[in-house]
Amino acid sequence: MSLPALKSIIAHYKNDKIALLSRGLVLDLFKGDKRFFKLYPIDSGKLKTLFNVSKLLGQERFNTAILLQNAIGAAIIAKLSGIPEIIGYKTDFRGFLLTKSIDLPEKPITQENYFLNMIKQAGINSLDDGFGMLRLSKSENNWAESKLCKLDKPIVVFFPGAAYGQAKRWPYQNFISLARLLYNNLGATIILIGSKIEQEIGAAIESAVSVKNFIGKTTLRETMALLANSDLLITNDSGPMHIAAALGKPLIGIYGSTDPRRTPPIGNTKRKIIYKNVSCSPCFLRTCPTDFRCMKQINPSEVFEAAKELLS
Image (cartoon, rainbow, N blue to C red; front, side, top):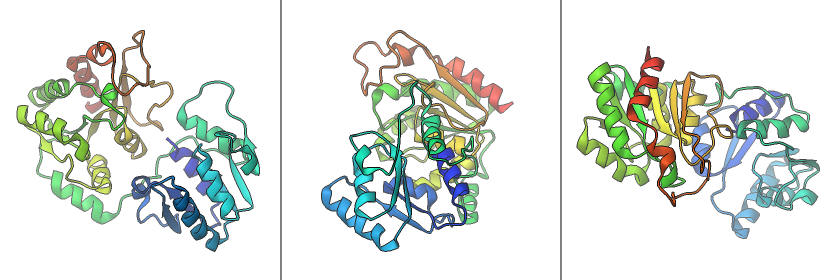
C-alpha cells in the first residue's frame, strides 16, 4: 500500500542515490531493482539491532530519511545515523526526533492515501498508483512460464490464507466449491499460493479438488512471477492481493473482519471487492468471537460470477 508513495519518492529524488530499509520479506519485493543502490534488512526492534543499522546508515552519509513506518524505532535509527533531515508522521511520541513533523490526517483515509498525504505535506509530488514499482527479471518470468505453459487456461490463483489470523480467511471449504465451479464451467486451472503457514489449508483443498499446489514451495519472487503470468487472483485481504494489484493483474478481494474502504488494492487494475457490511464488521480481530457471519455470508457462486466477469 506504500508503493505509490515509494514511486513518488523515487521520481522526486531521481538524481540521488536511494536506499530502502525494511523487513527482509518486504525487501525481497525489490531484489535486483537498480533504482535502489542498497537494501537494508531490519527484522528486529531490539536496541542492539537499531544501533547496528544506524552505524551502517551513518557510513553512507545520507541527507534525508523519509519514514513511511510510524514507530519511534525508525526515527531513532535515522537520528543515530546522523541524517540531517528526517521526515515522518508525528506518531509514537517521536515528534521531537523529526526535522519535518507531519500531522496525522484529520479524517480517516485509505492506507495508500495515508502515505501519499505524508509525502505531499513534505513537498513531494504524489503519483496516484504504484504500477511499475514491482519488477521481475526475464529469468523469473521464464521460470513461471515453464510451470504454467502446459496448463489449461484460464489460470486462476487462489490465496486461501491470511497471516493476520482466522478472521480474515474465507473458509477453505468455499475455496473448494469455487474451484469446482471454475473448472466445471470455465475449464480453469487452479493454482494455490502461500507460505508454509498455509500448508494445512492447501493440503485440505488439494485433497478435495484438482489443483496445482505451490503453497510453501516457492520464494516470494517466484510467487510474484506466478501471479504476473496468471489470469486472475482470488484472495483474502492480504499481501498477495496488493502485489497482484501492483503488477496490474485482475483480482477478487474477499474481506471479512477488515475494511475495504481503508485497505483496498492499490491502483486501477480490474478488480472486484466482495464484502458483507454486517453489523460487527470491521472488527479487526484475529479470531471471530461470534458466528463469522462476515465471511459465511459470502457464497462461492457470488465469487464465481465475479470471476466469470473479470475473465470474460
